[in-house]
Length: 104
Image 1 (cartoon, one colour):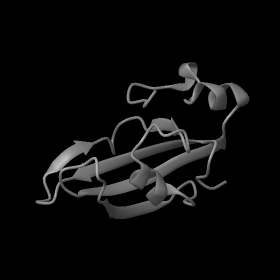
Image 2 (spheres, helix red, strand yellow):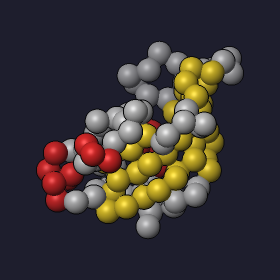
Image 3 (tube, rainbow, N blue to C red):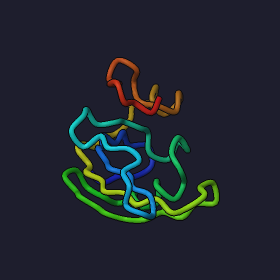
């Protein structure tokens, strides 16, 4: 399965600023989960993830009008699955599946 609208995506990442300083690093933590296409993450980040498969590693930079400066991401997609009707209606992953870093 690929990252696409109405899929639940589990991923880990490192975010760096323009000088290379780490802003956030969850590579060695539980992955976060979000409902792709629900608008819960930056639109440019969602676009960069579109079409990736489970196990994919990707490095990219996003420039978003909501950000003061570009952010550099190293991402690993751990898992992708089809969202349930309940998850689509609520706009987020099932709460009992969420871990400590969930985007809910």
